[in-house]
Length: 536
Image (cartoon, rainbow, N blue to C red):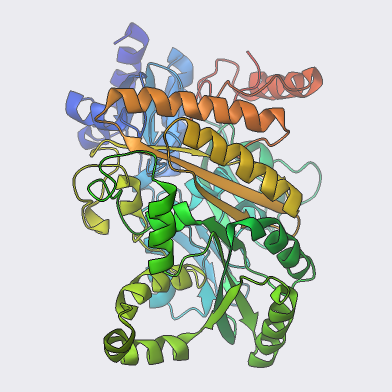
């Protein structure tokens, strides 16, 4: 430990209690562990409970040139978890800052701190009888709302593009100063929570996917619960992906389908609710295509499988349903189903007799479908966490007990963005599938029609960290896939710590502007050195 860090720890001990400063080796190692190989070591962990303590922490760090790495809850699995980009950082763990500061039922927003999790916000809205939905991701229910939003993460409802539904950040800079964005910087501002632009230069964006400051508060806009909602599921043959995307795009553009629409291939669908069938395929990897075809037929899974939701009055949903049917009717292989609360209730009643007659386990199917439907209603879930154990040889724990870092699950995410056309979707599929299969990994792909005009494809490279050769192969696969995608112009919307520094050089003028920002507000590079830096 350097003399500067020792001096900083002495000063931090004057403002924090002993249990807010963690230096024991066992805990440090937990924070140094991700779902892929990392070499970075951390010096200490600080756990502030309020913004004032964050200000004091940064002020001391600035004085002694001690690098800080802020995290919200650290469950950033597949992208680096809580591990810093560079060596020797002190983690600032904001999970104890978990206050929900303000809720407006009338204007549908909530102001909260970085430690507030998806589960906490959902339960709070329920307890307040707020007729409002949050937008949930498929990640852990214990993940931070602010952490995901600052990474520009996305979910499933009409409010799926998270950072677009943000207003009024509270930011602590490296020198300990604090300021508010938008109208929040003015005294007695009445509209800071409802108009995110404010007046003058818009600064909120520079604090997402950056290392310019520590966000200690944010206002999130909530979705008014619709009168009626109905989920839909559509499966098509593998060759119909371009046709499916081109058919759905007009419905996204004209607002017929307001939710984000997720399209997953058979590999993704099968791996979402199980583990690798080691014994059935005689330990062969990647997953044999004939086994996948057989299992897909058993589970009624298509080559590509789309899901979304229709919201509005019953009349509006009926009209949207009609338009969706019409848009897809020319795809010969399509199977289209609509599900609402009534459908689920009927299905639960007939599940047992249905299995007696057909042999199909409808109860098991409902276990898979209900969490997906709930996500489209803003209900977080841990259901999908065990999928990170896909390649492990031992059974996955119960969802609430799963810890991919501790259990050495191998997981790397790569998420390129493309225009929403069938041609681009097909190009992505070809690049991703051929690359992953060539390295011995299963090409589990999702493509989300996130906004009205873009596809956000998320690729999972899943493996077992207990086998070093697999990890080496996975990291090489990631890098080759990233290179191939970039060569075709498909850049990722976010980066894992492993990928930082691997993008091509940006335009010099852009990098110069970013460097000047950094130098102006953090000249000693105290905050998260190396994170999303496009300059040296």
